[in-house]
Image (cartoon, rainbow, N blue to C red; front, side):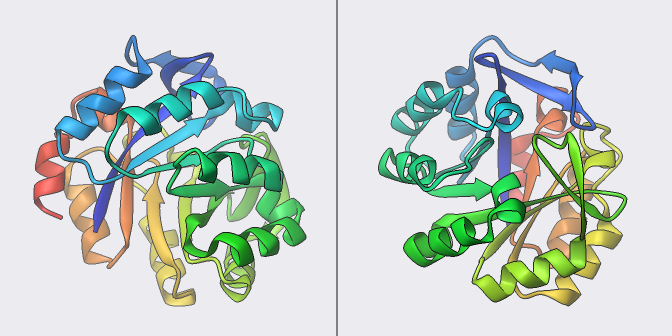
Length: 236
């Protein structure tokens, strides 16, 4: 299992939200690039980067900064947030991003998703962002009528290899991921699952590992020092 430290970018700064609420953002460091280099120095094997402005506005707002992370770090980077056209996908792949995460576009534009998976295969991941069991879109601001287990089955049928799974009610709470949801997903599809939201400490990392997940994302826990990234990496 891999541990992916998270960098969420809002107005050019690394921040953390609470339950996806843009009104409850907290700046966690002075510089995005310094964060990325620190994670690389800790021997992280993958970075998880989200353009929060992009997720809300549906465009690549922080693209220059994200491309600078990719150029600066010698480890793979996955990117999400506001990627809703093939040109946006092309842009990030052509600029060295290892995996592009589609969220809103995965549920609102199946043709785009199919074309992206056909063109880029495992370089395309889908963000499964849920509230009360239903998939959310537009930077988590809107709830769809898609039940999460039905949605992931469609993703698997399309050929999506990786799902980033978030229970929005857990995000930023340090109360642990929604393990029941993750167990249900593990039993329902064969996709690689990455747990996101709520991770607090090594016990949560260990539980994700025991569930047989492909990966787990940690953000707030690292910044608030309830989780030591090097220790987390050592048990995986």
